[in-house]
Length: 229
Image 1 (cartoon, rainbow, N blue to C red):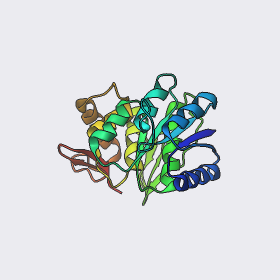
Image 2 (image 1 turned 45 degrees about the vertical axis):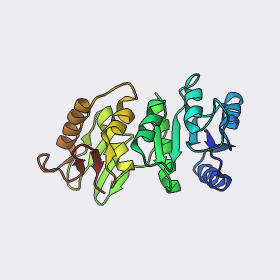
Image 3 (image 1 turned 90 degrees about the vertical axis):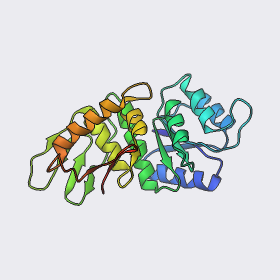
Image 4 (image 1 turned 135 degrees about the vertical axis):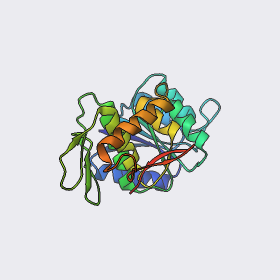
């Protein structure tokens, strides 16, 4: 599978290309917003890793503009890379059609996991293999949608429950804004805070030892939810 890496930091781009190549992907690189569009128009790719802050030109100023331009013609999965910690920037990127985002600095292993995750979600055949998540004695297999505690029987999750749990496990230890979770699970035009609240409740019923005193899925009122690593 081909991955388009767009970042004006050539050292980081080379590192990302090396990481993707070791993980079985074929990397293609671009170093500016205009170059990203030129490459994308002539080279079919399976996923785009897109830096938000990069040199551009009128009409293609940064990664957000590239994301919008790609979305006019393609549903290819897009992962944003950003050092911005402003929640509005992240929400804006997802609302423009990005599938996920990763805050710099990040580990190469984390990025590979996110790439496989968006590819699997975008593939109707589900042919992208993902390694099970393991935290202590807790195990979650996103391909089989099974959650397992030691000494217990596998708990099968629905598609939305599995998407929610996978997203929180990929970001274990972080409280994710509710808006970001909604966009990730339902897309930028779907879902609501009430739908998320109900999905969290259903997931807790399946994975918590005592859903009334949750230990795995944490809630920060007014902010969002996170998985406690």
